[in-house]
Length: 416
Image (tube, rainbow, N blue to C red):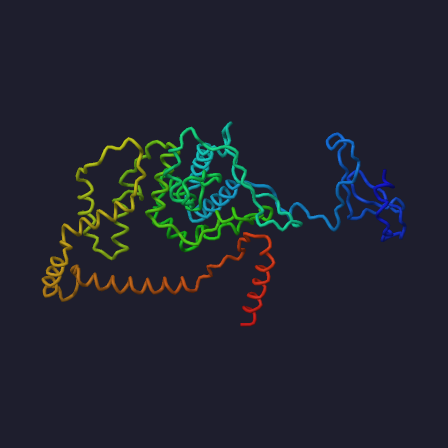
């Protein structure tokens, strides 16, 4: 059998120069004189499957590619789980309580179960990233393997998926799992922060993301080496902008309904997340007088009419605190583009030392400070390197061109 299989290969052995080849149990060629194993392999057709034909199926030439270089098969939800872990670790390094990570983990498990991606007997198979095939020039290295559609309650995920539907053709069914997107990672993190009563508002979270303290833009660059990312499905991890406060809150509120979370735990006035405490912080940030705080708290103590909504609402403590400050200033200074200026004109003659609050003086100082801050932000945005260090290659045939461009750019930077 070995003589028939090796009859077409007459190359001498590199060690003993003999032409005496055999085939090992693994299907690899070896020299029967010196037992030198070479890279040449052979695959034999299984007679129980392929019938009575005993012809050779294929002969592989060249060195084998290790599994580490080709990567492993992994799901899209595993990639988002890795990103969520990095975001949680970044917040822990910034001083967030360790209990926050456990809350985030429980919400992520519940999300996977509700979306039928894991922790369920009727699992909805999602898109997979398969190992790279270096011998193939296929345009895409991923395969969408959706085998069933969720039909029991289609309206549950309609609202949460509305912001990520990229197709205008309503007649085409969704064959790809569009349940998870990068913005939903921030929404899940925000839900976990609110549930664990951390003194970190959504505005603070977006500021940390914008400053680069929490990974979001190009977060896929931290994937392990065995998680190869290429193909059209890779664009799900590629985001080029930070979502707005309103959009993240809308997605988080949709997640509250999908996860069927109970009412959020109440917070007391001594909690740093309470609007009374946040208003003191915002008054200091806006360079407003501390005397306004007692009037803001007095406004908060007044009974407020609220609409009865059976579904739990996601609280917006930062927005409530800012709204109470604006309403308080409206009641005191008018803020009708007439009353506030008259009050400033009356205060100026009686305050030569400028110890009293003047709305005109405050408006000018804040306008100058905001202008400088916007200029600094624009300069930082212009200097920032937006292009990722590891660009996503949607087509395998473009990988060589992208690598050549990267080498030329690196050489140009070294010369300059």
